[in-house]
Image (tube, rainbow, N blue to C red; front, side, top):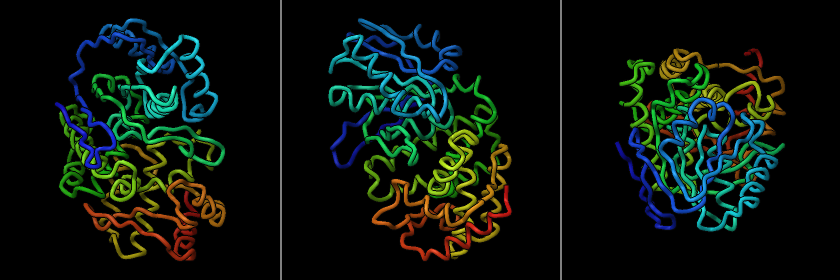
Length: 350
């Protein structure tokens, strides 16, 4: 199956997302596969059977969100310089969202930009992170605060890679699937309520629907000036949680699951979501063992941390909230006390 991203503004080149259609690939240039030890041990041999190039290198970086930093980026770039890559060379991101984000960013800055391809190996990266061209690294101020919008040449999604995915990583991907269904497609959410995503056929439908949704949104709004911001439902809270826990307690999708529950509480307070709808969303998340609570030790500190997120604008926090199931609201300029009252409700959680 194929899905195409068409950019309405024509500033980026359209590309194709292939689902279970990866064919042998040959590149008449230098190619570097960027991966981590875990993915390399499980799947690199299979990839290399389908990949040839004039010169082929494998660059392995440490695994984990806490290694998505300047040091890892420099390590990738140093390898490219040492192997004398040039503007005709190609990078292949082979791993989860961390690998994809770093590889894309490295491609965007190496000699002012070279081509790269995404081959995501986690559910989260297949349904979300690999599609749409967001690249970047973290620093001590927050997540993805250094980066660029830089689109891949193609995305190859192979569901076979998911067979070795740990349960927590699988659940993290489910959170991103739920995110898109809640804000864009009530029928898709109803499907998720009744589906078993451990079943390969149901999972294939969910991946396809998620990729189609993201492709449509990104095509309309590549630089997140409008509707693409809705894909950040749950992320405003999640990024604070990840930063406060040193990117080590939760996987990204797990933090997003908690963030959705917190965003839902705010949506309820504003009258956009009722208690039954919030319970339905939480039930789907809990079915895949996702965390749905977080103890906010200091609401004031949590609130201040919102302003370090790149989604804040002009000292104003932007919240993406569900408007019932299947709709959304982009809310700015909320009174501080309203937000604090929601955070205070989570002081006893955890």
